[in-house]
Structure formats: C-alpha cells, structure tokens
Amino acid sequence: MKAKEISALYIRNFIFGVEDSLVSTVGLLSGIAVAGVPKATIFLTGVVLVFVEAFSMGVGSFLSEQSAEEYIDKKTKLIGKSFKGGLIMFFSYFAAGFIPLFPYIILGTTGAFGLSITLSLISLFVLGIISARLLGTKLVKGAIRMLALGGIAIIAGVVVGKLVNTL
Image: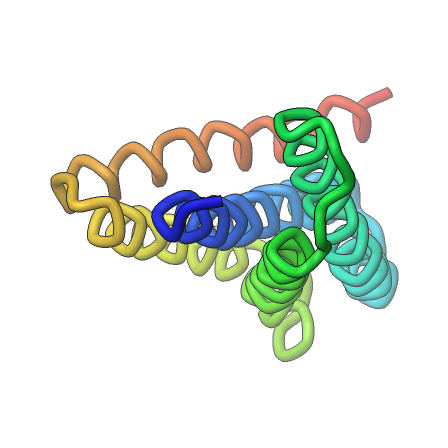
C-alpha cells in the first residue's frame, strides 16, 4: 500500500468517525429527548451508544480494510495499517460522541436539547473545513456540504422522536 493510500485510509477513518458520531449521537439523543424521556435515561443511552458504536466502528473499519487488502492482493496481509485505521475510527468516533452528549451533563433536557444540536452543527461545519483543508478543496464548500448533509440526518432523528412520541 502506497503512502498516499495509507494517508487516505487514515483521513477517511477520521472524517467518517467524527461525522458519524456527531450525527448518530445527536440524532439519537434528540430523538429520545423530544419523546420526553428523563435526563438520566438520555445520558445513559448516549454513553452506551458512544462506547458501543466507537468499538463497533473501529472493529468494522479494521475488518473491512483488512478484507479489502486481502481481496486485492489475494493473500493474508499484516494487520498494522488496518489496525491503525481502526484505532483512528475508534478514537475519532469516541471523542466526537461526547460533543452532543456534554450538554446533557450540565443542563436540563430542554436546554441541553438545543445546545447539543447547536454544538453538533458547529462541529460538523468545522469538520467540513478540516476535511476540505486536508483534501485541498474549497473550505466554505466543504464546510457547507458537511453541515447540510449532517444537519439533514440530525433533523431525521428529531422527526422520528416526535413521531414515535405521538403514537
């Protein structure tokens, strides 16, 4: 595997881990918050989600990259690069998951709801800038794309929570 391909693997895992964590965590937290679940339940759910998903995403990244490398080369490969990619996925998902969860530690559900979404949207925008900078593309375009697509997923979590709450 060439140095550029390795860098792409690490960048892909970092961006995917942060974006997926922000969107899925805030989507879940918002969805259950609008359903009127107690703050302690929201926090517990968020912590479990971040831990389980960080591990799952890290393992999934490792297994898929290792499998792809073995498929391409038709032989068993050393696990170093795939393992490092999985670690990047794990830690990026884990760290980013606490951004939308943090407001539920310090605020009540109503205040935490809006702040969690706001922090996640700001983080998506910043991630878009970081992504564009790493890739050498237009910063504003990258930031808006990340914000818009991630924002749609967040809205989906809130809508589902409201719909299920009305049943």
